[in-house]
Image 1 (cartoon, rainbow, N blue to C red):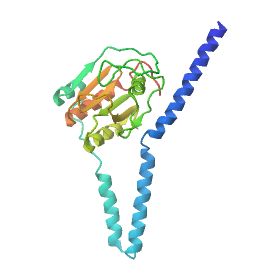
Image 2: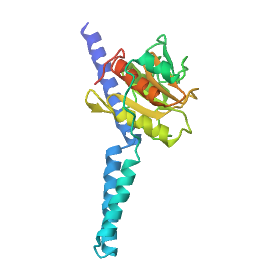
Image 3: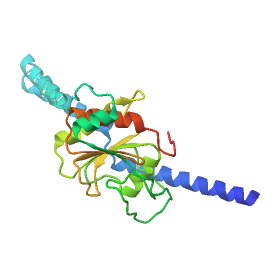
Length: 238
């Protein structure tokens, strides 16, 4: 009996160590938004200094540099105010498809998996989950990794390859809306890599909201979807 318990504990430790290593690796490929913001700030300061030196400290050049920075900051997508609270009502008005699918499995595997839904909503998956965060196109996690994230109660916002920057920025703005008081809480944003048939999708364990537009009603549907299904996977992982 003691030997069996020790073996179980050993396997648990090995799994935790593997997940920790994968999280570190995923963090290197994920967009480091905070670092990026610091770099942008340093560049803006450098531009202001150069303009001040070139213009002899004149107020006109300083104002121009500040104005350019402000224009860049204001270019981010501002989401419309929420009008529809109910998920089903918002999805219907937006023309989105809202479905609950049977669970396909939950076994840890290290081989590629073929999923019955597109994008995947459940099934066997890699032992290491994808990290929360925003991924640049081309650096998105593999499907076997992000299906594991769904099992942990994560919400995934996905967009088709070739999507407009506005579409990507809108999903990132949704990601940054606070949930439980935290922007980006238990969410991922990435380019879909399973050739999904719709423009955008919000995915949870066994749940799918698929839309071909990101009009205000679709945005409200994604808000409601996230509220309903965040942390509702079979395994809660903080």
